[in-house]
Image (tube, rainbow, N blue to C red; front, side, top):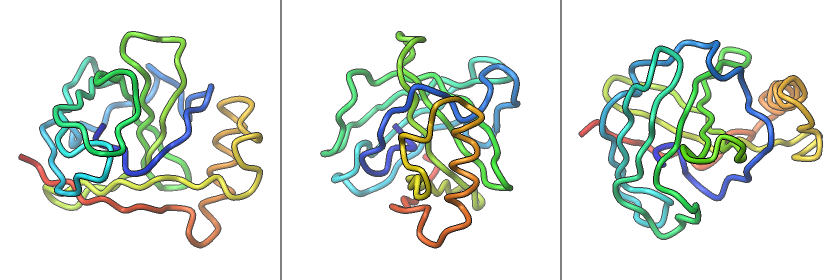
Length: 152
């Protein structure tokens, strides 16, 4: 998973509203990163529609712990930061994995998000999740495990 950079915790609520926010088309393509200790070293992101994408793990890394290599993803923004949230493509009732990202030319940087105020217990709805992320982003060190992905 391109945006898997550590050991994220799945949550029951998405950070955004699936199907309502526009896909960031800069994400489309094949991405590689060299650290084999991470969950993935090579992924492909394909557009599904104007709001979502399919993420396929092409090469798993040492920390890969998911039950699938295929995810549906969406994009959202919180306080000027961009995020993707992913869900098992074959399990629309499954939990969501969320990552912050930024683009720099043909490089994609991904980050784990630390929920530093109320923690995972504060995530009782999408609105509560967004409030927790917003509050956490104001604290130093809330974005961790930077990984640089290069377009292949």
